[in-house]
Length: 402
Image (cartoon, rainbow, N blue to C red; front, side, top):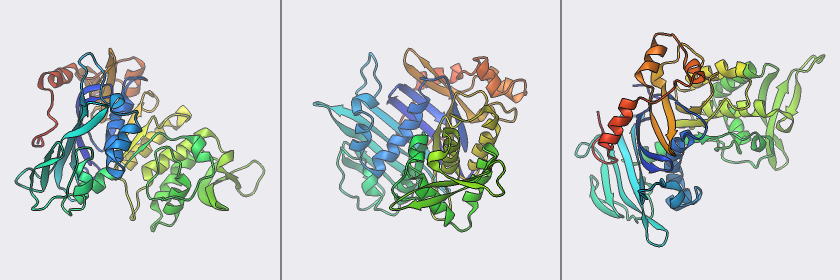
């Protein structure tokens, strides 16, 4: 298994438009489907885990409109949602973290069940909670917890659970906003890029100080391939604020001219944001997983091959999940069908699974690219896998499947 393969399996129940989902993830995963199919909801489930651990579950839910907006709406009126993430840490230790959240009368909620298991119960560290009360644990002492918060936050004070907490809280999720990248920014923590790129100047500054400067070299090389006139980018202080300064060729000029971010196009700024998200890892701080919403947005179709190469290269060190409905991005005969998950929506319900056998065979035999299949509307989830999910209703809790 690749070192970059942090999250190996995701199980979701009643999360937004997703009634049930059970998928395996590799170092690089493309979530492919039409607008409104629910691709973003899958990424948001992972994002909620990060937000609930770095802040609080209450804030994570409120930022999404509250529990009523997070749990799936249906005629069955589910009162809870659940998430299970199976993972492999850099140490090689595998395990899972899972919880489900249920509604209480009066618009309240509680964490019904929460489990964190490393190596298997009886073979490594673990804890199991039921409505805020410790049910079982490998540890002699365990911090006091309450049912309105995730216990892993408190348990991260124990050395055995800290690696899980650190890995889950260094996941990064991105929908880059050129407007925010263009504006003057306050100096911030530059170790991890924020979701819309609102601290990108601080991140670039942090990477410029890194030794060796491998990340900045990659960002600038790929940016110049996408936008050939741009020769580099650097952080620039302007009074108490900061921004980005680009070096760009100008006709008749002997040396590149310097332009601030406010003078750059949306496509250039978004490309820089995507590349910074992908290659922000360094010896000082490195994300465990990067999720990017439609990285091809605002880019010329000719840049798709460069973007695809950047995604592949980044996934060799950091797990990458991409949502896309761009045939151009997927136009590559070397693209393995195992890297794709098809996403569809039927009557408001999102279904996610690997490609059906016909599409997979077509790609393996190099008859069509995934992009060509997408243009022909032939990207679909495997119905046998979906039927199996409906039949078995995958459990959130219990031993990791091997």
